[in-house]
Amino acid sequence: MKYIATIALMFTFGVAGVYAHQKPLKMTFSGTGGASAINLQIPNTRTGEDNFAGDGTLGSFTVRIVEAGPTSPQFSSTCSGPTNLYFQTVAASAVFRFEDGSLLKVSLVEGNDCIDFQAREAHCTRTFKIIGGTGRFTDASGTLTLTYAPVPVLADAFNNPVFFAATGEITGTVSGVARDDDDDRNGRH
Image (cartoon, rainbow, N blue to C red; front, side, top):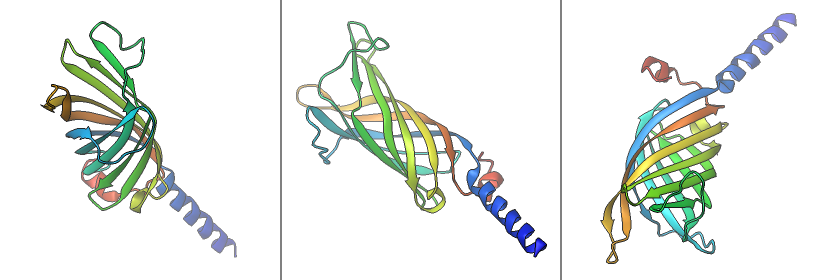
């Protein structure tokens, strides 16, 4: 009986070790963004969508982000100046799809865009809370921060940019993910 209890305890800790491991993340991505056909129906906002693909700690992935941002700029002490505009994201969610078919779902904690019209550049940051997923991300939790720089590719008849190319990186931590021995063999940590 003592041996059965010991084996059961070892099994419990072994399974917990597989899922409790907190993993720091670093991933890079590129892709496009623009207006979305989805309407979140949040007053005084516009809905945008980003579609990125990348690689990193958790393997190759694609991600689709749908978000709502204000139609008018807001005040910010960190994005100020006569040629700067600041926008704070109101709502957003995203789904990452990894090469093994696993999905990772995230929800916005905070997001902002700082646009410098004189320098013709923008800096965007989105912080997401992991809210679960499928496959190896069924019990996932943690936080991801996306930082990226969109560049206009196409403008409308009024010369407003409407379609963007972007490159960026994702950092953060994730726990509750089943360890994948292939990640260690492929040099991903």
